[in-house]
Length: 145
Image (cartoon, rainbow, N blue to C red; front, side):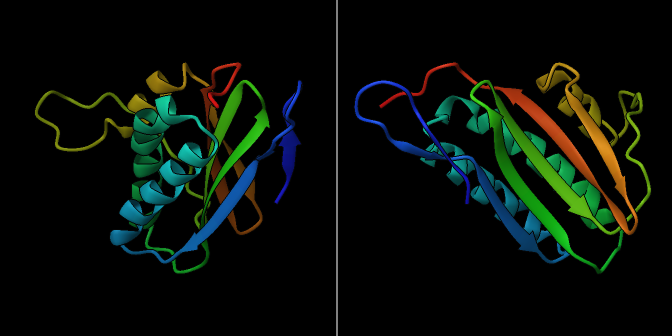
């Protein structure tokens, strides 16, 4: 696990990456939420927990629906002090598509919500045998002690 040290007196190592493999099961959505939210609390970013929970829940739900049986991976990273990146990788090369769901629709709003919560800072990286969807949340510039 990478670490980052804060500046100033009393340098404290801050973990900047965490990863979890999960099965393609509906209960993996809750496990992914608990994992990411737990990491954010460890990193003293409690104010991001609600948005991160919604984002990772939507991304893992989409992955579970692919029907793939290869590796499903959830990760949380701190590429900088100002960003928390949530990643969900799966074995499907089908690209997620943001649609306009009608008012009577029972699904189809997830990626629009991810787009709104991240201010459009999300995307997809295609891999030879799957993809990784990432979503970036702006983080406060200082963490509480």
